[in-house]
Image (cartoon, rainbow, N blue to C red; front, top):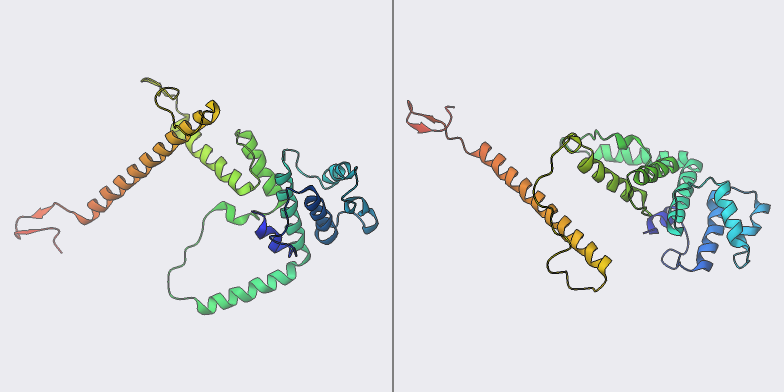
Length: 250
């Protein structure tokens, strides 16, 4: 999942590094600081380079504090994702003029090849944000944490989950006080999924099955609404009896 980030940073060992290996992870952090981030002066980077030293974990902990890594990050993969995005931000800042030149050239080439097809202009507010910006990443994780969403190494996936929770739980209809009637669904009763003896996994599988059923029902509702809309456009029962023809008078 990090290959795009590594490619953007021109890392020479793409596909050969195993971040689960402590030696590879430590070596990569040292390379990232040496080649891209450069937070410390050269003479102060030796401690990070000593990847076999017993005190390397303490050195890395201090490095995270010095670089102001967000506190909500809980796993090594989340920390790695943040460091990669931060390094990409710095890389762009260092070579901004070069990237702007490339972007301008592509824009001119695109304008030359542009056809008469109508152009769609996005109205999304997120288009104005740099989604790889460290502040944007931190804000995405804070929003997910506020909504009780489990952390994901990719901040955009956490943001998508947050958007889904907001749309389904905090819209005007959902916020209205409703009286719940009927019998609750007996999720703990009936035949199980049959592929595990673990009670927690079994319950999780039942929940996923219910969510899938809900998704299919929503899809079917959307399909039905689309069919009705199409019928309203293509079928007009009005009749002009004076002309003796069916349809709208042209």
